Length: 451
Image (cartoon, rainbow, N blue to C red; front, side, top):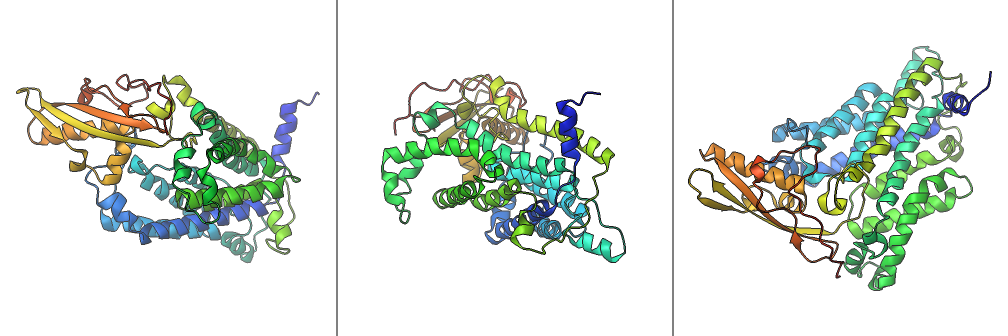
């Protein structure tokens, strides 16, 4: 019987692999999320994000997700911290991981104002962690199981390791694909704008004054993102690649104040190292047991589910291709697609409500409904502009008025002159959110950046 390439790949993915790198990944994931949760509370962001706003911008399909009371949100973050520590330690692992995924995802579904790519990544990774056997070795659960006289667990199948590697590598790769556009490569935008603000950075600030620096960093950034997963997988290039990862995230973190992102990515990137790298780094750590093969049925079922997951994650960043217009302008298909550092977008929004019965007009300021951050984010994103129009409509209905809502939005993208983003003659109170293209979003102007 002829052995096909698919059969050989399936056998290779079913073989047992050293769990050490997966243990290190689990500890890093839980530990960093615990730190991030504590930091979120310490900086007063629980109140700022979930208590102070009068209105929220939920994701389409998740309009039912709302923040609970102030005390409830603080309890959420306390429980999230405990769950993250449980994941790091591998204690009550399944419960801890599932709780962490549910709570972390819940907090970030409450309001798309605060969407960040690394929040989305953490949701994905905690979801994977809840399903994968990352606690069978180097964990409190494994220690307790051994104390009770149970036989050591089998090493995980290779597909478990490659699934986590795939998810981490995808972030970099699609981040590079997203940079293959004229704004990034031809105009070095928005880096030219951002670097001009960083000329006071210690030691390296003066070189940001040169336009050539922005072009060098733009092209270098695209090459870096596209190649770094593969360079980290290859033993001979790995030391240089990881040094580049550290340097890149230190510089980006210093320039753009990205919170925990510069800590998350280098830690997660270690999953692309050899599976036994922690054991070689610290001899005696996570001493190996005899590695029997992973159960065949687990490998087959797991690989099929993992294959579906991988296909979805590969297609999701490409969905912008089915929408008309430039995704940086329309933002249809922008989120959940690893489009990192591609926009410098500023906008101004005004709205008017017109009573359908009397024709009376009411001019509405966004600040009457939104916090400053919500207003800034809403002013450049069409789906949030639509939600803002619905807020106005619903508010007037509570006062006994049936109104049409029209919005004027002028936006500047990557140094271009400010231009209208939405058709101000369309009554947005009648428009619905969904997956269909938004006919009331105006085409992106053809003006080149003028920075």
